[in-house]
Length: 171
Image (cartoon, rainbow, N blue to C red; front, side, top):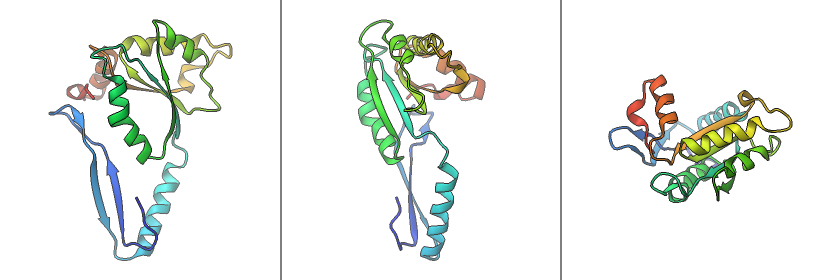
């Protein structure tokens, strides 16, 4: 958060506490010697994030795992997206295979990527749906994010293993 003319910059983050297995909002106040330094920092931050994805399709499977995906979206994910000024549209799966149907309709002009709050099954449906698109959308051209919402979350665990972060395979 930035106030014009202020000599500080308030930064919000959601670091993962691997021991407690959750993210908690952290607020950091960075003080500058003058407001001009703050303006330079803000412009540099904006320049560095201008090409980052800012519009997401969020696919939620309310039936997976402990059935907490919708609550996770509302209480944790949406506040983070709001603070990051990221636009999104939520698509809720209603039946087995619905993720395929939704992903086939993915609009690359409207969204910068797909984020799923689900388990491995819905992620698999997204990948299958994208591959069935008439334009043969290359999976490498679509940003796909996975927020654990299933039971075992084996795909996420495998990805985190690859990065040496296996102990953090929970939301």
